[in-house]
Image (cartoon, rainbow, N blue to C red; front, side, top):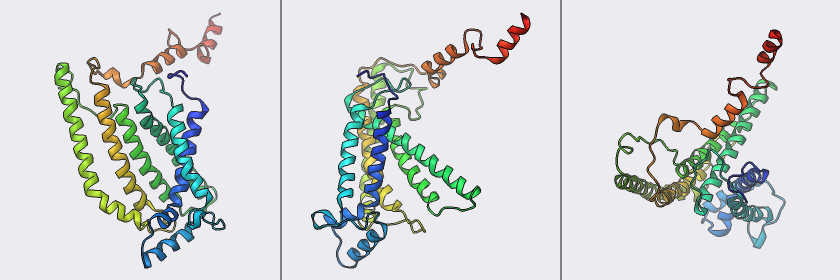
Length: 298
């Protein structure tokens, strides 16, 4: 399949299916905690009560004698399936970075997931505006859901930006140096990223696992598990960002020197499409004012 062909429905259905499976599994994660590593004493009763209150399918019996039912296990399998199939079907868009390796597919697919989360985030906000100002009935969950989704978008977009080499960089000194010195700069920056990722993971994993293990909630009427999930998501994504930085270093090691200018902020393919749309004279064939003016001259 052509790597440059993008925009097919499967490229958006896979991220959407991945988001749906992850959403279901996240909401029902207490079932797997109770099955795989149940807390002791009153903590078990507290977590079980939380799960009973949050369970979307309370009538379904758990598989294997546990709390997780058939839908929960299907969502877990769906995450693996949609991730694998999504990585196989994702394609590079014309405006994306040209480096395209098999190992980059995970970051690009998760970038598509972040894009889909932005769409869902906008839908939540639009729904809140509609019910509040049209129906005069606010929701108790839209604000927390927006914060929750925005946290995932922020983290996944950071991974995608690392793969795309689109994080903010200052090239004033970098561009005037020869390629061996540029490689040295790349090694230093990658080492700093790895150091940051190591100390962040080392310093935060204890608190993050504690919040996840007791499934700490947000403490509002909607009461989503934002503390339990986002802190764990940080521990998952930041190491992926560091790994992607190493991948970028290896992929770009033999690359030709690139000199950056202000023109880098413009997408050449998009400019070509705009030129084709407006024509050489600066107006398109469908320009109504031009057509009327020409008719008047005739």
